[in-house]
Image 1 (cartoon, one colour):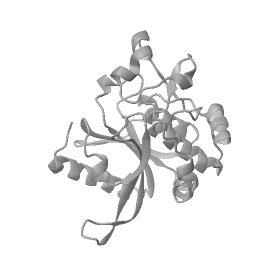
Image 2 (image 1 turned 90 degrees about the vertical axis):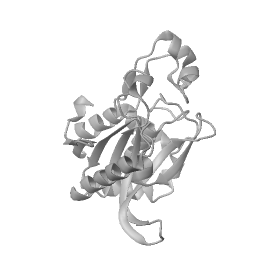
Image 3 (image 1 turned 90 degrees about the horizontal axis):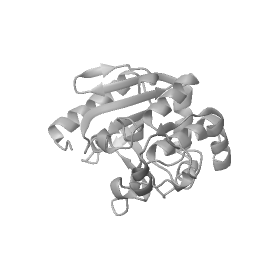
Length: 244
């Protein structure tokens, strides 16, 4: 894991600068929190997605500065099968990653404002399901992971709803999650190998969950993504949703 502040802090500031230069008030930012080789096949390189919001934040010295606050669903330290909603900041977001690389989706201006509305409303916390699974089914509410939670916030924003029933209906109609491929042994005993792994909400069918790539494809398909970027210490690329 990369935990060197002399690398993490400049990288976090670089991501902030890129977002600010593009005028992003709200962006979806992903990181490589786990080694992709340790994750089920199909989940992609990015293992965590948070919602970044440009706002006035409190600096360590108590002063007020403009910057990005990050809204996250994190597994709890005490129990990997439970999650909580946590607000932190860019340097903390990248505080322990396997590679300093970020995937970014900048929604269009209208959707940014609608996401902001949800974040400031009671709906934001009502959408949280504390029971966590890394391969949670996005069509159901038994388990949740960070990417499913982001999709739930997006659908709540797009359709101006806080109804879980309506959100599930809209997801089934318009959203194609990522199929995750597992060996038979890993599917049966996955909780032994992967922290926070449960499959009961898939009812024996194919494992499908939300990923950074599936979110990018959804927003691109319905013309709600202003930009999709990948940022590394070496530079910035625009890969396109289908390559994620």
